[in-house]
Length: 91
Image (cartoon, rainbow, N blue to C red; front, side, top):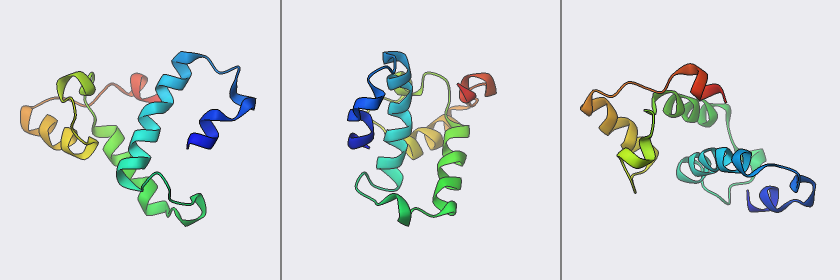
């Protein structure tokens, strides 16, 4: 992930886009591991990531600081928080 982020071909990428990628990186690190070779990642693992992502509430990082994403999903359900809107999710 670090190599991808530091790739000189990505120098044109705006900071907002880089910030949005941070959630994807975080999800991969938490569930699959940051050093896992891409070729070893299974479809089922990606499906799990999608399921977690679709359940995240809006502003989850400020609502549940320091929590792993799976913990956020569990806590948000317990607190009765709705997942983020699909339009937000797709960006």
